[in-house]
Image (cartoon, rainbow, N blue to C red; front, side):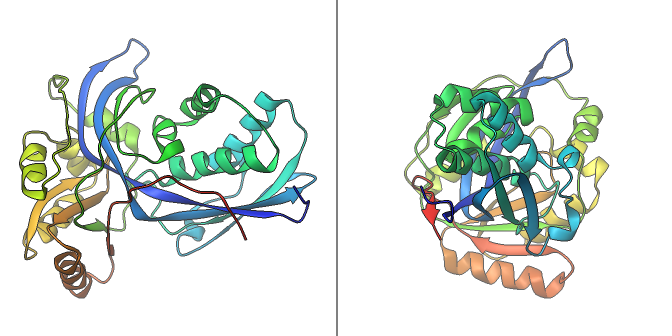
Length: 297
């Protein structure tokens, strides 16, 4: 591969359609069961060969991140891959940060996963999928599921994945109340009993899909609202939009989502929320269905 090669890969937003806390390990990590899907909205990474390893950040949320290694999971992932592959090759990584930070939609995890994928290509690293997953889980619980960005049931501490059928085509509205939410604080605030593990199968019909989701929940919703009360306002705003079939918090917050039978209804709902709350981050999107592809730019 030429030293002038520039590679690009999307880092799509992750949505927890449900999230059940099923137990807790002695070391404090929690066991989860979550239906994870991905959207066409997300960040994007570009990598190109360099002698050393550097990172620049662009995009609307660039100011909320630092390029320092200690605070950036993209550089942590790159250095972990260097170590695992026993390589001294470098790269310049450009992160286009389009998603809010600390928002419950896996932005950092998807970015780290994309870095692992692209640098493996750039550096001609041929590690088994399990090795990439092991690197990912050491960085964050959501990184393994973000490596392939496919619909999956995520369980354990994020290390156990079961592929499931993608959701039926529908409209999705994502809304964030412009307030970052710290995941440890949400788990600390959670007092409810643990949930039972289910046996999810994805219905092909939108109505049946919504009904199936209604039998589940996000166990972190109540504690997240205690940590960040604006989440309650966001959920309320989504719930009164025309055609909204389901409203829920993703992950530990603070991004919430609404599901609609079609993209036209979702577009109208997003426009209505933006008009009422211009200070919030809000957009209409769809679920993605298909593999991620590294492209040359």
